[in-house]
Image (cartoon, rainbow, N blue to C red; front, side):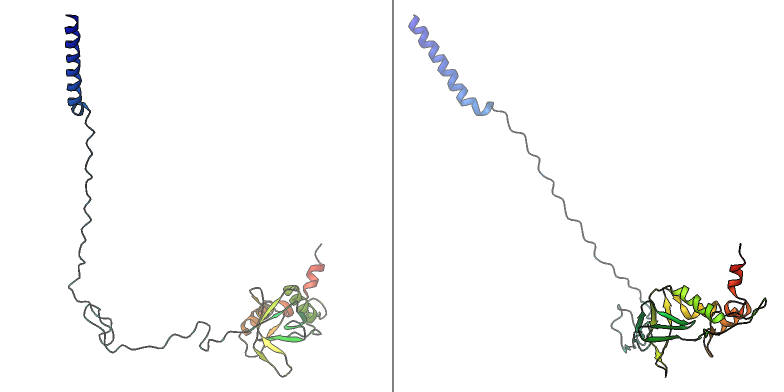
Length: 224
């Protein structure tokens, strides 16, 4: 009886094992479903729209609308002149390092003598009348005023013309200041005949500036 019970138990265990082996794949959890990617459709291209109206030509004889066809009788015009002048030549600049002032309107540096264009230099020995006293040495004071303006700085001069005395006659500047115009405007030199600075001389004479007025040193000496 005991042997029969053991055999029956073994048969039952084998039957359960066979059943688990057969049903194993069905008992595993199913993997999650993968969502299908949604395909993005490319944007639709909108065909270009051409206007059907006619465009008026700027000049029917020379220019037409590109919709109507190629132009006829196109004319090639000459290019505009350069901004620096019609000849397009560049002005040569001469730099005077720490120039010497010979007189108001005269400069010199390293053997090169320069006379300011449009200006009549004021002679160093010139004396000017005074309303309150004897004539004063306006030529010396005018030269001093030019020296104070330059103050041993570099002067830039346009390379213009040379007169018979081998003197360069041109416009010179210190920084952005035209030295000749400054002298005439303040009355330390007179404009030359036919110069464009003549109006400045008239103003300086009317307002008694520089050589047209009294000795400026008197006002300085009278200050307490």
